Each structure stands twice: as C-alpha cells, then as structure tokens.
Length: 561
Image (cartoon, rainbow, N blue to C red; front, side, top):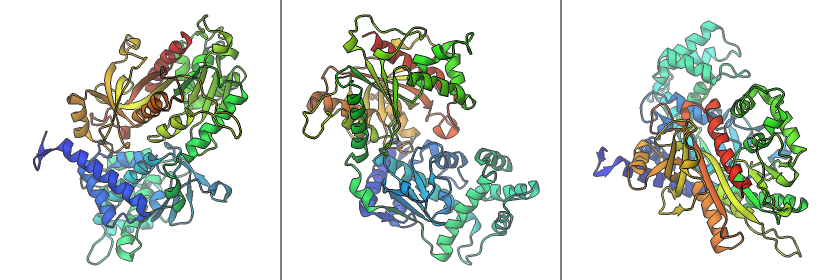
C-alpha cells in the first residue's frame, strides 16, 4: 500500500472514519451545524480523505453521477432544493396536512415544510443519522463543484452556460432541442461527456418528472450559488425531541411490546419461537407459493416460481399467495411503531404442509411445534434496539413477567463481499465491529457445506459490521481481507444482533443459553471491484436464488428439530 506520512492508506482511512463518527455525534449533541462552516468542513475533509468506493470520483473535479444516483434514491425527493434540513423524531406530522415523502430505497418518512425546509424523520437509531449526514456531505461537495465551475468568485456573476440552463428550465416541458442544449451545457459543467449526461438523464427520469436530472443539477448549483452570493446558508438541525429520545429504545420497545401482545393473544408465548430476520416474502413464498400456484406454473421449478413472483408486474400473484398464507397459519402485523419493521408469524401447527415440499419432523409434540417469527430487515444499530427489546420478558401491569421460549435466531442479510461477486454467499464465524475492539465469535448452525453444489461461490470467515453504508473504502477493506482478521464481507447489523442475543442469553438469562444462531448473507456488491459497488445498481433477479437457498436451509433446520 502507498504510505502517507508514514501511515498506510488503511490507517488514514480508519482515522477519517473515527473523525467523522466523533464529529457527527458532537454535532448531534450540539443540535445544529452549517455544512459550509468549520464542523461541516471537518466532515468534508474526512470524507474526501476516506474516498468511499460508493462515492466514486468525489475527490476529483468532475461530478460523480453514480454516487449521486445512489444517495438520491435514499433521500427524499426535492431535498436538493432545500437549504434547511431538520432531522426529527416521530413528532406527530402524520396528523398534519403535509404529504409524506418516502425515498425509493430507504423507508423513512420525510416532509417538505416549505420551499426551503425538509424534515426527515429518524426512528431507526444513530445509524440512520450517520447514513443521512454522510450522504448530505457528499451532496454538498458535489453541489460546490458545480458552483465553483459556474460562479466567478470576484464578480459574483454566473457563467453564460448557467444562464442558458436557467432560461431553458423555466419551461415545464422541454423540446428535444432545448433538452439537448441543456444537457450539453450541464455535461461541460459536470466535467462529463454528452453521452454520460444523456445516460444520467435516462437513469434519473421518472414519469412524473422526466427532466429530473437537469432540475436536480440546477437546484444543487442554485442553492450553493445563493449561499455564496446572498449569504443564504445551508443548515442541518436536530430537533430537541430527537436528541432527547435517541438511544432510549422508544420505538423498539413499542414495536416489541405490540408483538408480544399478539403472541400472547394467539397463545404462542410458551411455544418454541424461531426469530428470522429476512424479508416479507421469502418464508411465505417458500411455504405456500408452490402449493397455491401449482396450476399456473405446473411446468416451472420452485426457483422459476420465486423469480416470477419477484418481478414488479406480478403483484396479483403475490397477492394470491399472501391471502392464502393469511388464511392458513400466517399472521401479519404492519408496523405502527416507527421502526418500519413489519412482521409475520407462522404457526406451523395450523399449516397443512401437503404440496408445499416441506414437512415437520414427526417427533414434534403438538405443543412443541415451531412458531416462525419473521421480521423485516433492521438498519444498523436498530438491530440491537429491536432484538434487545424483543428478547426481554413480556410484562403487563400487575402480572408476572412471562419469558419467551426463543429457540433460535436466524439472520439472512445482504452484504458486500470481498472475494467473489453479486449473489455469492457468505457464512460468518464471527462479527467484528468496525472502529472498536468489539468482536463476537459464535457457533453458526449454518456452514459452508450446507450451500455448496448450488452453482454459487460460498465463503466462510469473519465479517465486519460497518458504521454506515459509506464509511469504508477499498484500502480499509483490503486490510481486513488480507490480514489475519480473515474478513470475507461487510454489513451493518451482525454485531448488533449478536450483542443482543449474547446479553439476553448469557447475562440477563431472559432466553435460553442454548439458543441457536444462524447467519448467512448473499452479496449485493463487491466494494473491492470498480463498477461493482452498491452505486452500480441493484441485484435484480440475481438475488432470488441466494435468498431462497438461505431461507430454505434455515427452515429445513428448524423443521428437522
């Protein structure tokens, strides 16, 4: 590795992450900051030193388009137009007239208060804050690149190109000629080719906003220019209620209590409960899709049926499977707590397994038949908050605390892989928490051998739990991979899940010390390969095979006692 002032790039990157982490926590405690101020500059410099792979050319003069696409899918639409960003708790905005804005790739409620202010609801813990602040820092770096190219700092005059773009974008609908003229000017400002600008225009375009790319770039530049010429400062604030509530598991406690109440109502608290962190379709489809859709897809394999169900146009088939499941042993509970984690409960005593391809071990007594508790993906530190609260005894006023009979905790997740490609599998033997000396070894009930021979590469070893989607880079990951840490991949929840399980089973004794744990991940990206980061796009149907392969192994182990 290249040495920088006697230190490796990996060491420099570690220092940059620590500075960002400490700075963000300080700013949260302080209550506000200006991205162009001293604190904001500290975040910028650390991010530019770190240079996460997901942000591509952030440290270069040209604008990073893939990184911009990635963050705008995870931030509310219109945030580039706002100079005031408020991070808030769940403070009752649902009862207001404001329309809720939910980003396409991140479930968080956002509200456009006026033309200058966007409020973003934080109910998923500190990881959500790190994620948003890192994305906003990147957004402002790119916006200031645009400003630097079009604004004369001495005369405060904007360039001829920028005036032309402003004039063109006054129209709601653009002619082909106007669009191409604007794209030529924007390509030059961004330091990109016309081809690249044209491709970005197609990527950003939506039915409601076909010229989204042009308008996003224009507003990024406009807000940055007005800060320089008119003194209209961009500001990020944290509401007093958010600062008071964060870290107290308020949303996690509400979420867990509602679930235990539901388990109590269905008389399931004493039954063996198997917690599965996955998505809201894989277990349901595994148990019911083949049986329900046998006539429609009699010639199709199980995998082909799952692939068909994953396609956006097949909502009617998904609805048929869900309705059948709800009438045959599955109970759904949509989240109302603010965690954005929906759940499903499968009572195997009520399921007729004929035609499903699965069968319970005959040794199960009626009262010992497993209950599958499936929860949607948590986000970062939220994994600790939710599982920690869920594993606590169920307490009601004036009643004796009731302990849950948790038999296993299984985690199926997406992760970045450090060797291999999208869709390949990772079976961890330990979770290492980035930026700390914390590490969590465990006996994984799943093994590499369980998944071999299915046409996918399978890797076994340690995995690093990172602080945020952007808080790592190639140098740091190469160190983890090549050193004796033997890291095979990176994700955001593993150490948090295991910390909650270990404290509940070995210290608090609220669940059995013999609780089984299963962890398996499939690769959503390879951050060590250029063009294979999360910013390069989603998995599509590539993720279907590993998703169901992992789900199948988890369910088989539970059913085979």
